[in-house]
Length: 342
Image (cartoon, rainbow, N blue to C red; front, top):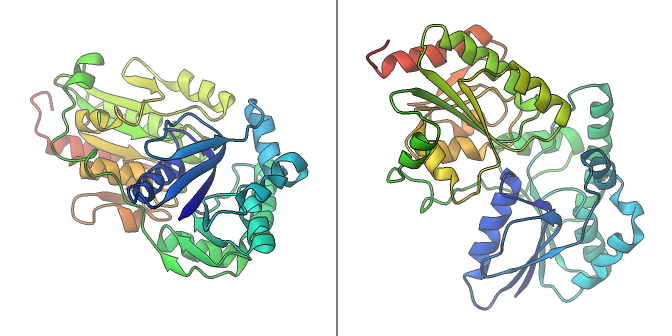
């Protein structure tokens, strides 16, 4: 079977892209399948499948405009003709749905849309952008033979935004051969001098909706009572202005690691004591699942899909908007470790 998996980007630091990676690897285990990931840009190296990169602007601002109005690039939009010999197309996010939508209309190819949700904007202009994205997204997924949502939350969100129903809810999975209790974090502890420290970890995009600024403020409050605390922030800066803002907020106990390769990521989870996120929106939150698989307790706000992902017995879900409660949860978790300096 010839299978095309479509995603706008294919990079280590994107949760959606890692879902695509695992899906491509799983399909390619069957030697009868010929799997191709089609993306605009990305750096993940394929194992057992092919990757075709169509290209897009390098500037982040123009990338966002290009992706929204992708259908205006006639050369790229007509790439759907190259899909005529495929048996199945799985599209993971707009604007790649355009290719799947057109291939379905013209060639009758089985089209599956994998719904990861669409967030709101951070401000007025971004809100307009997201509303246009929802509008175009609906148009390109109405022709899908099947819609799969990655959580109950994204299923409800899809219905609220478009009126469309998911055919299946399939929670994201993680690579348990990679993320598990046997992983060691010694190399990371040594690299960042974390021995005898209380280590909090965040992994993900560095954007305003992830509320890294709030996380930093909360950590600083905790550090006043837990002086040996450290915060590791792993991720790719999406918007330079926001990144510069949070970098200015940081002190010597807040470490920005930059992008970490997928193969190295488990060691970071193993090196931390707690996984923390102040994110305002998550379709699923893979880092939470990965951290828990490595035996780490999670502290997060009770938003979106977190009730479905955060361990109900060990994790801590703080009511949305309760910043003091979030700080207290971080502090009380540290107290629970019973370290000498507390």
